[in-house]
Amino acid sequence: MKIKEVIVVEGKNDTNVLQSYVECDTIETHGSALSQETLCQIREMQETRGVIIFTDPDYPGEMIRRKINQFIPGCKNAFIEKGKAKTTKKVGVEHAKKEDILDALKHLMTYDEEVKESLSYEEFIDLGLVGGKEAAKHREEIGRILYLGKPNAKTLYKRLNMIGYTKEDVLHILKGTEA
Image (tube, rainbow, N blue to C red; front, top):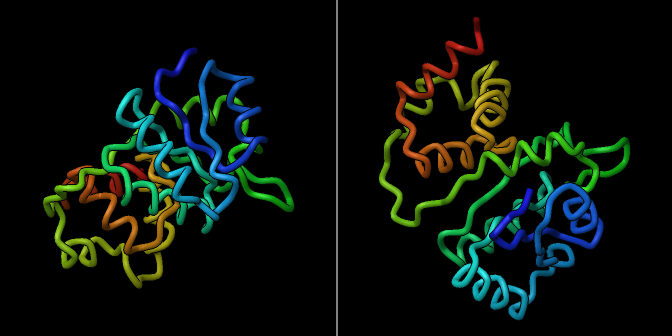
Protein backbone atom coordinates (compact mmCIF):
# COMPACT_ATOMS: atom_id res chain seq x y z
CA MET A 1 0.00 0.00 0.00
CA LYS A 2 1.43 3.37 -1.03
CA ILE A 3 0.27 6.60 0.58
CA LYS A 4 0.57 9.78 -1.49
CA GLU A 5 0.19 12.20 1.42
CA VAL A 6 2.94 12.85 3.94
CA ILE A 7 2.08 11.43 7.37
CA VAL A 8 2.85 13.58 10.41
CA VAL A 9 3.93 11.47 13.39
CA GLU A 10 5.55 12.25 16.70
CA GLY A 11 8.80 10.30 16.47
CA LYS A 12 11.20 7.95 14.74
CA ASN A 13 9.56 4.81 16.17
CA ASP A 14 6.24 5.84 14.60
CA THR A 15 7.99 6.36 11.26
CA ASN A 16 9.70 2.97 11.43
CA VAL A 17 6.49 1.12 12.24
CA LEU A 18 4.45 2.91 9.56
CA GLN A 19 7.12 2.35 6.92
CA SER A 20 7.21 -1.36 7.76
CA TYR A 21 3.49 -1.59 6.86
CA VAL A 22 3.01 0.98 4.06
CA GLU A 23 5.11 2.88 1.58
CA CYS A 24 4.99 6.44 2.90
CA ASP A 25 6.94 9.54 3.79
CA THR A 26 6.69 11.08 7.25
CA ILE A 27 7.43 14.28 9.09
CA GLU A 28 8.31 13.83 12.76
CA THR A 29 7.28 16.49 15.26
CA HIS A 30 9.78 15.19 17.86
CA GLY A 31 7.18 15.25 20.59
CA SER A 32 4.92 18.09 21.66
CA ALA A 33 7.56 20.81 21.21
CA LEU A 34 6.32 21.56 17.70
CA SER A 35 8.72 24.06 16.14
CA GLN A 36 7.81 26.83 13.71
CA GLU A 37 10.17 25.21 11.20
CA THR A 38 8.31 21.90 11.42
CA LEU A 39 4.95 23.68 11.02
CA CYS A 40 6.26 25.43 7.90
CA GLN A 41 7.50 22.10 6.53
CA ILE A 42 4.08 20.54 7.16
CA ARG A 43 2.36 23.50 5.46
CA GLU A 44 4.58 23.08 2.40
CA MET A 45 3.74 19.37 2.22
CA GLN A 46 0.02 20.13 2.60
CA GLU A 47 0.21 22.47 -0.40
CA THR A 48 2.11 19.99 -2.59
CA ARG A 49 1.14 16.44 -1.56
CA GLY A 50 -1.39 16.64 1.24
CA VAL A 51 -0.90 15.72 4.89
CA ILE A 52 -2.29 13.06 7.22
CA ILE A 53 -1.90 13.80 10.93
CA PHE A 54 -1.43 10.53 12.83
CA THR A 55 -0.41 11.45 16.37
CA ASP A 56 -0.60 9.36 19.54
CA PRO A 57 -4.00 8.97 21.26
CA ASP A 58 -2.95 10.88 24.38
CA TYR A 59 -2.99 14.48 25.60
CA PRO A 60 0.30 15.56 23.92
CA GLY A 61 -0.77 13.88 20.67
CA GLU A 62 -4.09 15.74 20.70
CA MET A 63 -2.28 19.04 21.44
CA ILE A 64 -0.02 18.50 18.42
CA ARG A 65 -3.02 17.59 16.22
CA ARG A 66 -4.97 20.67 17.33
CA LYS A 67 -2.02 22.99 16.73
CA ILE A 68 -1.37 21.63 13.22
CA ASN A 69 -5.06 21.75 12.25
CA GLN A 70 -5.30 25.37 13.45
CA PHE A 71 -2.14 26.42 11.62
CA ILE A 72 -2.68 24.41 8.42
CA PRO A 73 -6.27 24.00 7.20
CA GLY A 74 -7.37 20.96 5.21
CA CYS A 75 -5.13 18.28 6.73
CA LYS A 76 -6.53 14.76 6.94
CA ASN A 77 -6.60 13.14 10.37
CA ALA A 78 -6.16 9.47 11.28
CA PHE A 79 -7.22 8.34 14.75
CA ILE A 80 -6.41 5.17 16.62
CA GLU A 81 -8.05 4.10 19.86
CA LYS A 82 -5.91 4.37 22.97
CA GLY A 83 -6.61 0.73 23.84
CA LYS A 84 -5.22 -0.36 20.48
CA ALA A 85 -2.04 1.68 20.79
CA LYS A 86 -0.63 0.98 24.22
CA THR A 87 1.55 -1.29 26.22
CA THR A 88 1.43 -1.59 29.99
CA LYS A 89 3.60 1.52 30.30
CA LYS A 90 3.33 3.56 27.07
CA VAL A 91 0.79 4.87 24.58
CA GLY A 92 1.69 5.51 20.96
CA VAL A 93 1.02 4.76 17.33
CA GLU A 94 4.18 2.62 17.26
CA HIS A 95 2.57 0.14 19.69
CA ALA A 96 -0.49 -0.57 17.53
CA LYS A 97 -1.00 -3.70 15.45
CA LYS A 98 -0.65 -3.55 11.68
CA GLU A 99 -4.38 -4.05 11.03
CA ASP A 100 -5.33 -1.24 13.44
CA ILE A 101 -2.91 1.19 11.81
CA LEU A 102 -4.13 0.29 8.31
CA ASP A 103 -7.74 0.63 9.48
CA ALA A 104 -7.04 4.10 10.89
CA LEU A 105 -5.41 5.15 7.60
CA LYS A 106 -8.52 4.03 5.70
CA HIS A 107 -10.86 6.17 7.82
CA LEU A 108 -9.55 9.72 7.54
CA MET A 109 -11.31 12.87 8.62
CA THR A 110 -10.67 16.41 7.40
CA TYR A 111 -11.66 19.34 9.58
CA ASP A 112 -13.72 21.96 7.78
CA GLU A 113 -12.63 25.40 8.93
CA GLU A 114 -16.04 26.75 7.84
CA VAL A 115 -17.92 24.52 10.25
CA LYS A 116 -21.67 24.89 10.16
CA GLU A 117 -23.51 23.69 13.21
CA SER A 118 -25.30 20.48 12.26
CA LEU A 119 -25.86 19.50 15.89
CA SER A 120 -26.72 22.07 18.55
CA TYR A 121 -25.20 21.79 22.00
CA GLU A 122 -28.70 21.37 23.45
CA GLU A 123 -29.25 18.37 21.14
CA PHE A 124 -25.84 17.02 22.14
CA ILE A 125 -26.87 17.21 25.81
CA ASP A 126 -30.29 15.66 25.02
CA LEU A 127 -28.46 12.71 23.45
CA GLY A 128 -26.95 12.00 26.88
CA LEU A 129 -23.38 12.68 25.81
CA VAL A 130 -22.61 15.10 28.64
CA GLY A 131 -22.73 14.52 32.38
CA GLY A 132 -24.94 11.44 32.42
CA LYS A 133 -24.10 8.04 33.86
CA GLU A 134 -23.51 6.54 30.41
CA ALA A 135 -22.13 9.69 28.73
CA ALA A 136 -18.45 8.67 28.66
CA LYS A 137 -19.32 5.18 27.42
CA HIS A 138 -21.51 6.59 24.62
CA ARG A 139 -18.85 9.14 23.61
CA GLU A 140 -16.23 6.40 23.48
CA GLU A 141 -18.51 4.20 21.36
CA ILE A 142 -19.27 7.02 18.90
CA GLY A 143 -15.58 7.88 18.70
CA ARG A 144 -14.74 4.24 17.97
CA ILE A 145 -17.44 3.78 15.32
CA LEU A 146 -16.63 7.04 13.52
CA TYR A 147 -12.84 6.72 13.95
CA LEU A 148 -12.66 9.99 15.92
CA GLY A 149 -10.43 8.76 18.72
CA LYS A 150 -11.65 8.86 22.32
CA PRO A 151 -12.71 12.48 22.68
CA ASN A 152 -14.05 14.26 25.72
CA ALA A 153 -17.50 15.89 25.43
CA LYS A 154 -16.29 19.23 24.05
CA THR A 155 -14.04 17.59 21.45
CA LEU A 156 -16.69 15.08 20.34
CA TYR A 157 -19.25 17.88 19.94
CA LYS A 158 -16.79 19.82 17.78
CA ARG A 159 -15.82 16.77 15.69
CA LEU A 160 -19.44 15.74 15.09
CA ASN A 161 -20.16 19.21 13.75
CA MET A 162 -17.00 19.13 11.66
CA ILE A 163 -18.22 16.02 9.87
CA GLY A 164 -21.78 17.35 9.64
CA TYR A 165 -23.52 14.81 11.88
CA THR A 166 -27.05 15.64 13.05
CA LYS A 167 -28.95 14.51 16.13
CA GLU A 168 -30.63 11.82 13.99
CA ASP A 169 -27.23 10.53 12.77
CA VAL A 170 -25.98 10.22 16.35
CA LEU A 171 -29.23 8.60 17.50
CA HIS A 172 -28.84 6.01 14.75
CA ILE A 173 -25.33 5.18 16.02
CA LEU A 174 -26.47 5.01 19.64
CA LYS A 175 -29.40 2.73 18.76
CA GLY A 176 -27.00 0.46 16.85
CA THR A 177 -24.74 0.10 19.88
CA GLU A 178 -27.68 -0.98 22.07
CA ALA A 179 -28.64 -3.85 19.75
